[in-house]
Length: 206
Image (cartoon, one colour):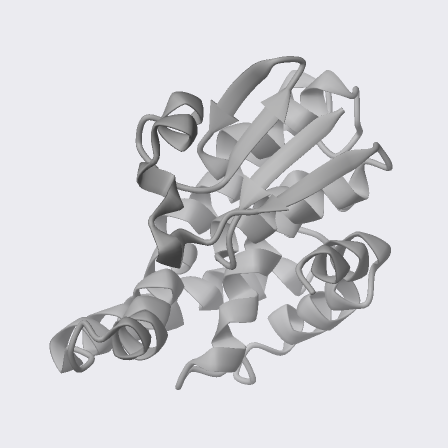
């Protein structure tokens, strides 16, 4: 059985949504990073980087959310991560694009606008916010253009790329950043938000 150790972050949500989509038994173990538990010897034995999420499976541990998503789908033989080399590469392409580009900047905005004030790290940095907003705006336009003729990010069907990307895009609800200017992204986002994997995944965070 899969056991996911995680916190309220988009990285945890990515893995959680994928596990919920696999129809496999799994356990979610809430790891409250605000307590410093991630620096304990027990947690560092699972992930020496001291970060969440961590996947526990068959007595082994795996960290980094992208690797967790790929592994969980792969080991269960799920079509969410297709076996055809080109189709799989398309999934990897969009998964990596979101991690390195719009997801990066949306996460930067989330850190500046939400995390810093919440944990007393000072005021948001306006230059960082300006840079992140500009890049996220440009890069989501590419996604919107792609979704104009595609129902999903890769192979025109649901994949781990969509579930991971959703976790990044949903941060916009807590930011001074709106996806309203991207109608195709909005339709994709609303459709995924109502899907069983996202609904079941969110229920585990309650």
